[in-house]
Every structure is written in C-alpha cells, then in structure tokens.
Image (tube, rainbow, N blue to C red; front, side, top):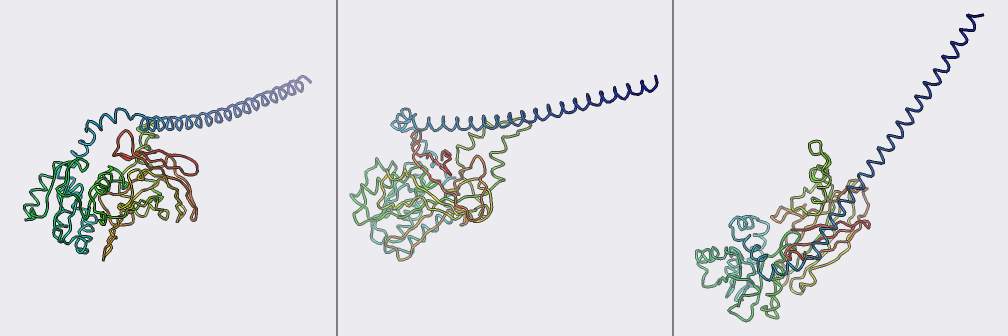
Length: 396
C-alpha cells in the first residue's frame, strides 16, 4: 500500500511538473511572439521616420529654393553668377567635347550646307559662338556677314581660328553678353545658336537667344534650330537604383539612410541604357523658338507613359529632340533619346525613392512642373507627381 501510494504521488508530481513545463513553454512562445510583433512595429516606425526625414529635407530644400531670392538677386546684379557661368566655357576642354559630339556638330553642319539658299547673301547672328564653328559654317554657305557673340574668354581663340581659315572679312566676333553688346547692324536675317542644355532648358541660354530675336531679327527672319521638344520615358534600372539609393541602407555595417534625401533631390545626367526603357515616350513640351516667350519656358504638363513589359519603374528620364525645318529644302533633326546615338547632353534621370511595380499595358499617369530656380536662374526645379505622390528635384 505504501508503495502504491508513493507511486501514485510520484505520478501526480510528474504530471504537475509536465503541466508547469508546458505552461512555461506556452509563456515563452507567447513572449517571443510579442517580441517579434514589437520588433516589426519598431522597424515600420523606423521606416516611417526615415521617410519623414527625407520629406522634411526635400521640403527644406524646396522652401530655400523658393524663398531665398534676395541674396540671389544681389549676386545677379553684381554679375557674379553669370561670370562664373561664362568662365566655365573659357577652357578648351568643354569646346572639344562639343565639337567631338558628331551628332550635334554634323547635324548643324548638314542643316547649313544642305540649305544654303537660306544663308546666301544674308546677315547671320551666332549667339554664344564659342570657337566659331557655326559662324564659319554659315560663312561657307554664302552668308554676306556673320556676327558671333560670346562673353567667354574662348572668343579670343575663336578670332584666331577665323583668321586662320581666312574668313575674317565675313565673320566678325564680339566679346560680351548678348543683352549688353551693340551690334554693327540694326537687323539680322538669321539667328543660329547651339543653346540647349541638359534637360533642354538648363543654363537658360535660350533667354539670350530670345532677347536677340526680339531686338534684332528682321520680321521675315528665322531662328535655328526652330523647334525643340522635351519628352519623358520610364526606366527599370535596379542596379543604378541600388548603387545610388539602397547603398545608404548599409554602409560598412552602418545605416546612413538620411543621406537618401540628398541623392534623390538631385537629378543625374548620364547615359541611360536603351534596354532599361520600359515605356513609350511622352512629349511634355514643344518649344517653337521663333515665337515662344521667356515666361512660357516655365511650364506644367501632364504625361502618360504606357508600360511595354512587366517591370519595376525606378526612375523617369528626360531627353530632347532638335529640329531644323522652317524654309528648309531638307529637314534635319537629331534626338538625345536613350534609344538614339549618344550625344554629350546624355539624358536626365529623376530617380524615384522606391520602385513602382508595373505590368505590361499599365499606364503611368503624372504631371511635371518645370521652373527656373530662383536661387540660381540657370538651374531648374522639377516637380514630378505620379499617382498623387509628389517628388521634387533640382537640375544643376
């Protein structure tokens, strides 16, 4: 009996211990689950905080660009900003790069040489003449007089180049700003200029061309190129996105995600691989140089990008096309598209904070706002709105 009783008690104690162990296991499992939930909530909170910091930094940048104009006006009045711009064109390297851009230079040459009837016996104004290549093309095409204007020190080299080629009796070069120089003639028949910058409008050199048009162009005269268009396409370039944005998630074991906002607010100028293009292009601006006004260069436009394959949109790319058409017997044009031959203008990339998953046939709807940066009149502020989410960028 004693043994039976002890056996019963032992079994009872064993059952109690088992129950206690099970309770402990259930308690540990419940605690572990709660810890995992807490960790997940903390990670989400951290992501939200990072996004909030990025939005705050973008807001700060935009606010500064929009409202810090007083000092800028003083700088412009003092000519410091403009002089820095013109000084950047004093070195031979930038001119060599442009001259070696065959798409650019050969299309200007072909337009002039294939349409000599436009230039024969005419007075031509070359705005921002640089080394004088367009002026000399015009002289060779039969122009009666060519006047080249440039504020950069490179014009002294251009004068030597003109003399070296025996064209000094036709080509006259003047150093100074287009808005300040006095031409030796009251009117010109043709204005030629290679004024285009990154994203077409960067550098605001078109403003000087339009000033020259309004002040000196004969009523029947023409500006060349006469048409330019600005277009957008969507891209899927995860490798580029990883290297520029996701890179900051883990830098040698440290988080530097606050740096993402600095990267995202600046557009990048680069060669976009044509196999990364995932949409049809959409034109967002057409510039008729013979009629447009400076105030019309700031614009807002909607766009629709039709997706050509299942992909993740990592960015929006801007590029432009240039057209010589008015009065031409042979129309000449070239494109800076990612699918065309490379130019020194490359393409302008606006990287998105997070890739957007898309299916073939989807349409990416949005708007683009483009305006001069009040802090730097030669730079641009771009605002892209996609599916009601806004992204701000600077082209500088």
